[in-house]
Image (cartoon, one colour):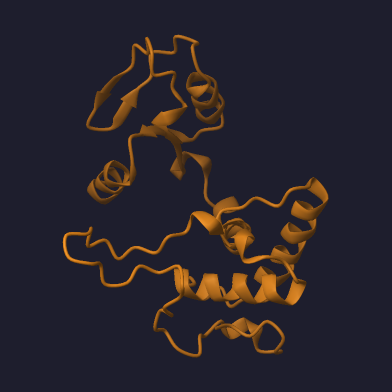
Length: 184
């Protein structure tokens, strides 16, 4: 785990890289049960209730991220360790973990993203924003091809992003996105 209280916060090395088992982690299933070993994380996706609390945590995430070593990306486990330690030190519940990890990652990569020309950025929109009933959009190998019918907000987001120079993809899920990115 990364030690937030030490002066060497810039190293961002973990004490050990092995995932820790926890009470919320799936264990060996009983006969006939699903063999999924994915952790259950729904309890870790709580958004802080008030704007003031969100702003306070965001500011703290910015401060912590500013002290992290940016010579290499943090692994998910390292980012989780930093987020857990921040929550513990600030006296906030574990339920905010996912939200804090997003804020830490955003702060960690903010300068890199800002330095990237918008024409080299990809704006991903989830296809679940569409109105399922009556949506005239078709799907192709690149995801959903919005017809800009006005029934949902996808066309609005797409228009704004394209005006800013972004490439836009309305994707069905991660496998499609990864396939497109890997294929160039």
